[in-house]
Image (cartoon, rainbow, N blue to C red):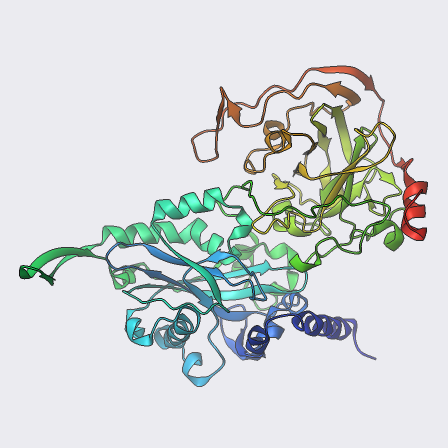
Length: 573
């Protein structure tokens, strides 16, 4: 009989083959290329297909491979060339990243390790393949190796990256002829332009390795590159004849003294215990103290104009299996027919915000930092009947529900480790937007019955949820000012700044309220992250008609019979 691990691997491979069947033929072919499989100290073990190396099932078992990230700079302007990965890419499609990122292959020329020659050959090959840059414009000797990073990043529920990534700089005058199968856009940027881009776009618009490199290494190295400029003479032809002019040039080889032989471990080991198996205690301890933030240091969740999830409202009694399968949704929306009234292992991605006793929150599927799982969180609810996981007793220490003309909101204190947030997690934002409009979580849908007057549900398209280990807030907005009351550009601020309200243990109340002021707007002007210190949070709106309770506990939703009939037998009459 096959072991559970073997069975799991076989299941994942079957799922991968089915998923690949819908992809571009060239990208499917590339998944059969042979990557270099490593131990944790970057020693060659064997070769493995690109498909094998990028399956999360194998990654979770510790499978690790070699990669490179190349940063190409113009030698006269000092600008960095970015690429946006084609939508045809199987992992991390349609995302901005550094000039070129790929893998050396398990072939003789790219397995050679002295002076990183194999990696440099791979970079030269892929610059031509992806961007049409001839090898003659990027000589092997012009690549400057700087360091290695070891990171892990899921792409969706099936694919991901687990790499020791070699960082290469090169300065070169190049001609571009991008392959549309690999690259959908390119852009030259200065350091300030890149910081603005990362601040203006949603964090999910950038690849995780690029965000990691940018957060720690890129800008100091880039500053050194610019500071070490040289002035050279060159001949220029003009109408009056040839003349000599002085030109400032930048050379990546000037950074040779900055290179190191370290492997910088940039992920949280706790979620992947198998990674410690071949590490020394010192190395394992070093990794354990490292944190992988899939959000960029510079990036703030932006309000993007991309289409939000589903133009038409969904009916919670008649949900499809998945509302957004095309973006790799890991959970489900037909929760009641799939899981019954509630289920501790539910992957339901529907949330309900109705009252102080009837609300849901997003939380990780397993213990994790919320920022690391934001695309894959699932629903935890106070009431059964929705097909979700239940919020355990003792989780909610205090909560206030308010209904305003423009939004409903819950705020409060919690022991949210009971819904799988890591102890000490300072929090993250969930919202329905993102670079592709897929949202965090992908496929997440929010409903309320608070505005209908007859107990029927309506879908809310603008909402935001802030979660930390000790506090939470969830605001769901309607009406012409929905985007102003539920902005998605302040992910670095916490619950109380975005959603003013009561955050007091022992308080359990339902209230009507006025809206208060738009978050982030002061004297008619909008403040943005990066404009300096955050101004004080606005005061909460005025409350009225408050009703206090001694506490809250798990009960059955009063909408359960209607929802269950609809889920099992069709739309309720």
